[in-house]
Amino acid sequence: MKVTVVGTGYVGLVTGACLSEMGNHVLCLDVDPEKIRVLKEGGIPIYEPGLLEMVQRNAAAGRLEFTTDIEQAVAHGTIQFIAVGTPPDEDGSADLKYVLAAARNIGRLMTDFKVVVDKSTVPVGTGDKVKAAVQDELDKRGLKLDFAVASNPEFLKEGAAVADFMRPDRVVVGAEDERAILLMRALYAPFVRNHDRMMLMDIRSAEFTKYAANAMLATRISFMNELALVAEKLGADIELVRQGIGSDPRIGFHFLYAGCGYGGSCFPKDVKALIKTAADAGQPLQLLQSVEEVNDRQKLVLVDKIVKRYGADLSGKTFAVWGLAFKPNTDDMREAPSRVIIEELVRRGAKLQAYDPVAAHEAQRVLEDVSGLSFAESGPAALEGADALVIVTEWKEFRTPDFDALRNSLRDKTVFDGRNLYEPALMKTLGLEYHAIGRA
Ligand code: UDX
Image (spheres, rainbow, N blue to C red):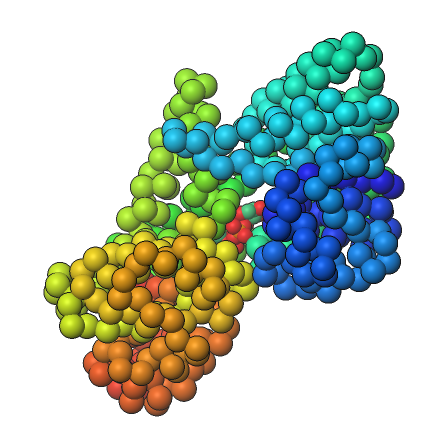
């Protein structure tokens, strides 16, 4: 099939690459000429395991192409995916200007039947707005052309995006038009082969499903983070509690890890947007408001522990920081807890030596105004001359470090671990002072 994907961010590029992998002829459009230049030259503008190889393979086969030419992009696909950004407005609601601009372009330039599919995370009711925008452009041209609108929210996780897309646990499609339903079924059939994992519903329910999923996951994390604070007061170990409750199939083990707060391009933005949508609808979400507040506070939990140990004034202290990305296997720094932690430590006078296996470059960009922060070439290099280590992101290479080197490098032999990577008893045996989350 011929497919156009508008927007070559995480969602758009992964969608385009994976659809071309199944034999579709995909044209990806972006307004950013720099991104398209990189893609045309065989690179990708983001770090995502497995994506580069897939893009190169399908581009070489001629199934995956890139353009900045809107006219060409609209002409190409019968299915037009909109996968552009929906950044938060000042009041927290999702800004739809890019989504609606894409819809207008389709209406302005289409000459035959199109299915316009919202892949971006968009507030409930956006499907109607997209439909109205396309129709308005057609009316301006005095044309009577057929089109359909569908919603197809994306649930992929950064760092595992290709695998998530290729083997989805479900594909949610909101569509009411018969042709749209048939085309979407055909498009996704190779991805849901073993048993039909495609869930067909009305557009509003599909749009809401995405927010509900992210809100539920964020709630689990904030719930565990809050319990972790209580566990510390009570002398209990949140890791044992996690295992104790996770074995109940009604609860499950996923997304129960206490840490230094959730970040990324989705949870913070989607939680905010849903809080706003619900309030506007006259049905405020009290629980979700607390989820957000708990997370904002959790991003400072490591700083609290450091202040408790060293005092409020950290001048003269040097900390190694391991991990900057909002989670492992990505270079994404959006809403990363490391940003809040670093700014707060530096504000208190500390010097920081940071290391991240992949995100250092991106971190340098977003933290360029922060003084007192330098970047090391490796985990061990970051430790040199530091008083203590602060672990913010659980990259695999931090899981079993050379503990002797750790003890010998750190002046105070002290570790503040925001991801609970080590056993407190082991750290004690090794002669390391260990501060974790929710572990007595
Ligand atoms: C998330 C959703 O998982 C995905 O379905 C949706 O499409 C987009 O948002 P992503 O942002 O890539 O994906 O990251 P995810 O792996 O979900 O992690 C989000 C944040 O939660 C990270 O900062 C992570 O460190 C944190 N987290 C996750 C915890 O603190 N504890 C956990 O148990 C799990």
